[in-house]
Image 1 (cartoon, one colour):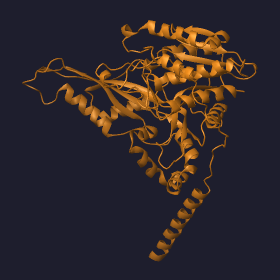
Image 2: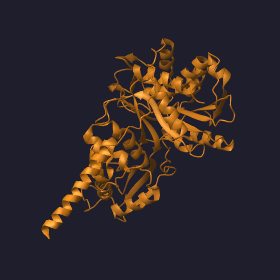
Image 3: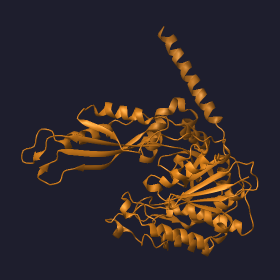
Image 4: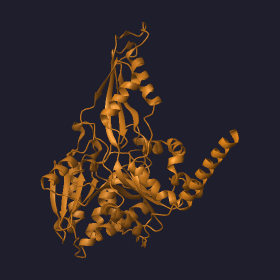
Length: 481
């Protein structure tokens, strides 16, 4: 009886091994082969234009009193003078005071239009960190083959890249086959009211776009284990967004006579509980597309895991959990971002509050996450309130077979030799999340190579990134038929 059982086990193991090997060996590449033309060297004038754009302090502040309208008006005038063909041939509308919407009429009205997006605003420089910058953050300095400054990566490289490419094409009397909308928001970093207004305007006009493209994934040379070729990560969906305010109110008093539990104790314990119990990990549709696109390009061991996710799911999840970026790709995350408590060193505060930011994996609904948070904290003394206007559910997924994905993939492959492309789950929030009713196909991609310093100190992009960005937009605009 034991021998028979062992034989059955061995047969099952053999079947599994054969199935794993066959799946691995038959996992074929899905990458479309495109002939690439290396990007031409940057025209010095185009470089000066980018540097000039970085000089404008188009800063978004959460405090409306700190908004400097003159910087945005100055930037608008700078674009007018720098790109005369663009402004002469396209219709411009100013939305919500500072957001810019341009319409480039296409030859064929039967073709659906496309929407290309970028934003004018940048995040502030923290006062305590300004001295840590190697260069003046608003000088647009070129140093060590990089362009340095606030907004280089987020997001003036895309805005200027689009304008440079369009201006160049207009000089040859080029007109696209389909209408192109350029939407340049002014407050993406603080919620995107300008983008919301543009999306509503296009909806009112019954615009149904073939696709929308906004900032997002990048070209990376070294961030995907097992892949030796550069990879362009095309965001086909975006995580949702939710902020909760936790508050605890307890009797305060003199710090010389502390009670067994203060409001700070209860609040911090709740945060620790949440952080100690991660939300369930799983593969989203974009993650499955990532596996499908890059699995065949990996060495045998990694390819085996990706070819058989039904067996190696736990192993793959374990690998991704090891890094912050990888972990964010496979689960809803939570991060404490603001804590308020106390007014004096010898006074126990009565009220303690904390703001927690959640990024929702597609399929995780905001209401369900709030219910799980309450269950994990399991303390009625902790009240939860959704920060007004903070909840936006994860976006729908754009198929790899869509026109937008195929056009963008072909354009970047034709712009950068020996490149792979892959779907990608966008873990940050973009203005394009408001355009779901304008198009069911939204791609989030920025054609820059391993940028440095998003929202941080010494933000910069390589000259190679700018060269690639200019060439990519020229290829994309030329092929929108």
